[in-house]
Length: 507
Ligand code: ADP
Ligand code: GLC
Image (cartoon, rainbow, N blue to C red; front, side):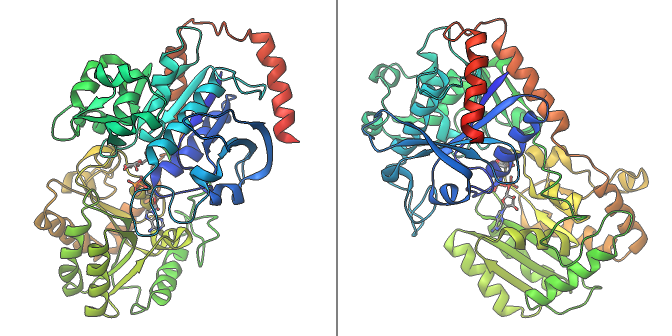
């Protein structure tokens, strides 16, 4: 099995959220099961800087009017994962974010930037780039790669099979019909409705429609997005996919997120000896200018500041937190009005509230270790990773009963506490009252040290490794391939080419 894994971000080459964590950890988990996986993504400046052993291996023929690109092969840092970066100075080498400019405006040429990614992925998949390797499965992730399944579907039967995973139905990659010319997609796909979505061209719709198999990142979200409430207008398209659509729960990278070896922390700790967590809490309080006191409950929130993550409701919950003699730490960025609200709360409650506005990977680790409670609420949550990291760090999550949050946290109601299965606090509606009442329950149990300790141990004993889910993906890849042979490239030839390309990458 040879798998080309495509995504627009992968940690640490580029990251804006959980997609990057998955795009590193899942390929590595597949690789450890003997699968030949390679990652393809755009050559943003951060990726070009951080990739290890980079070499230019091919000049890329023009597509969608882009004629300055080369393919770079190298390795993912701290792993053996082969990575291909598309280095196109005009598309990807620019200051600012990977999707947006310095002012938070979407790059005006995003349709072209990600159409190019799909065209190169398709060529690589069809063996049309001389790199001596061809996959039999392409696993494409999120709308940025949505045109790939469409492009491959135009190749008849002798082509790699496609899996498309949606990590978030709210991000659809919809562009004005006039952008069609920038995408290198035949007009008939728009006129015929296959990629048309309310008068726009939709990358997400293309992925959901044309992939051989479609997945999302938790079983509950998979059920939710078949309904109008969560489907973002695409529920009918998903329903039409029938059994070809399923939900596979994300795992986490157990080496990157492990309080026993985490080099970001003031002190490491583990379930058997949790003393270090107290040191981490004091260090976090000191670092962020909060009153240094282990007895005060510390509530953390590391998140994009968006409507999805209920950041508006959390900002409204701060007075409740401060008035109940708890502390609140935010690490996040997003909506400028919400950023301002958290900064104002910090000024209003000095010593009780700390707001770090920005992106800080090591700080996110220290927040997970130093907090007692992690807020991970959401109006919708395809999977959510921060609550999983919290569990592993003995930090009890407060979540809403939706998507992957519902699949991963067991509410500490009386029965679950008694039954020794509780791991956090779950509330129903995305309302301030519900958040407050979940926090009230959490703060009450925090005052019962023995119960709290037991809950922490239960949380830390959860296993959200990639083991089980990687096997699910493998089954899906096999099901997608069926008994189709890759006639374009006979197996023996692929093996020879494969050895050659491994040498190329290693060299
Ligand atoms: P989403 O991908 O929807 O944002 P996830 O919970 O799946 O949510 O993943 C979020 C990831 O991004 C986690 O690794 C989290 O630690 C990280 N993260 C979010 N905001 C920040 C931030 N401001 N600084 C550092 N890491 C962040
Ligand atoms: C998206 C989702 C998040 C999920 C992540 C990784 O960003 O919002 O819920 O955990 O992708 O799949």
